[in-house]
Amino acid sequence: MGPERKLDVPVYDLSLIRGMWEVRVKKHRERQKKEKERIEQSALTRIDQEWQYRIYCKTLKTSELNLLHHYLERSTLTDIQLCTESDQQQCQEVQQDPNEVKLSFQLEGERWMDFPHELQWMTYLKEWHVRRTRIRQLPDYLALFTQLTVLDIPKNAITELPPEIGKLTVLRELYVSYNRLSRVPPELGNCEKLERLELAGNHNLSELPFELSSLKQLVHLDIAENRFVSIPICALRMTSLELLDLSNNCMTDLPQDMDRLEQLVTLFIHKNNFNYLPHCLANITTLATIVVSGDELTCIPTKLCNNPEIKFIRLYDNPASKEKKKKEEKKKEGVRRRWREQREAEEVKDSGEKEFIEAYISSLQDRDFTLITTRPHVFWGGLSHARHRPLRHHQSLHFLPALRRRKPVKVERMMTEG
Image 1 (spheres, one colour):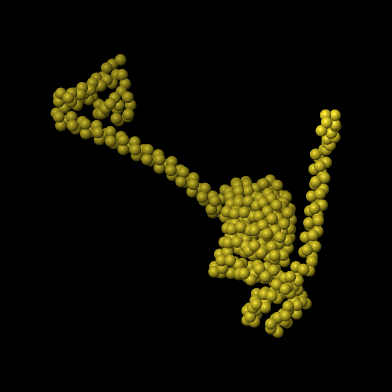
Image 2: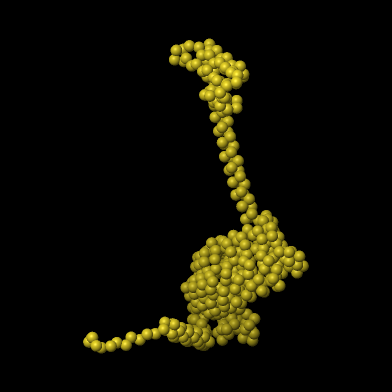
């Protein structure tokens, strides 16, 4: 490269480059969304599900197939040949009014440690009802159940929800109460048609992801019996909420923008540590029922108490306040116990000194010593034992120990004037 050769260095504005890439990303996401909608509307998924069902039914005996039909009510697979005439009649009824029946799967009992293997072929199901089992996690093929509308899995041992749950885009009801959840995946925010969400009794759950703010159709939210110290931010953005259960948590106050929940009808906030209720609750015109704990509640908006359209229920015997009172009582009892121990120690010390003095004096008397005093006080070590006061200058004490010489000892109290 010669020294006289010039180079043209292009100079761009970073904002222009950023805008250009944002446009490209936006177009790419739109293409992905259209492709996803095309696949969902395609008949290939339904055909695949029908053939999977037919293949699975071929592996079953007649009695087993009849037993399966007792649990499954067919709505979309009406063209499948059934084994009995009663099943065929039921199939024709389904074909006439397919909206009245549901496809459901039920599983219950502590003997179940995992989901049955055959479940992965039943992707036509619309409802899962799994209760009181020892299952710890949901299957990996959960995303295949694209028609699932109800996922009812309470009182199990489930420790987490998989991210694949976000692919259940038609899910309307999710019940995961009384499990062992410690977190909720952000992908759950993709289930925008969700109407009911129950997460009560997981005990280790203390927060919800902000992505759940996209659940605009949610009308029922239950997060009771957990470890929330404040109301989740995403809950304040669920504008369609009608019932909100925050009971039995560790909350101490409510936010001042609670009136953002304009359609709220029922609010459960008992068994917490609230001292007051915000005035913004009176701005919610649809509010009909409030349940609180009245043990420590000192400040309540007058509009809430005097409004005849609102059922204001105050519960007492709050376990949270009981625990707090017990802690305070234990603390006071500890202070009293330490004070008693200190006083007893002083009494023991004083009694020990008194016994020592009495023993010492008796020993002097045994030696024919003479004790002379003008007042009935015993003096030892320069202190008056009766009042623990140091001797003044006009109360001199002549203490003549002659223990080494084994001679009598005389103790005299000399009173001097002025």
